[in-house]
Length: 100
Image (cartoon, rainbow, N blue to C red):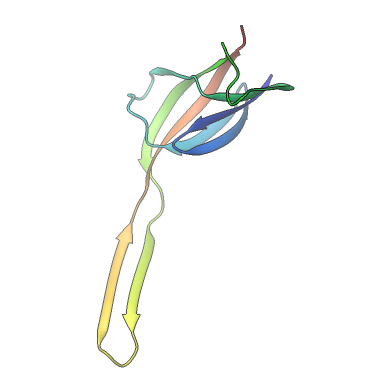
């Protein structure tokens, strides 16, 4: 089975066994979570979501991505600003796609 889910403001195309990196979720490692916003299952497209469909996933770990450096400057004005950012993520594995 294949599905399109929404989490963290992004859409993901998943199958059972897919490992994905999403925006940070409030769940501990090893916990099971359910995604209820399913936009598509196999060839069934929702309006906007498929009623009764859900996707179960297992949280594998939490972490931070590589650092992104933001550097701002104005030429000839001695203005320099350097800032780093590491986006937190949650690694999940899709276990089951349910359709009612």
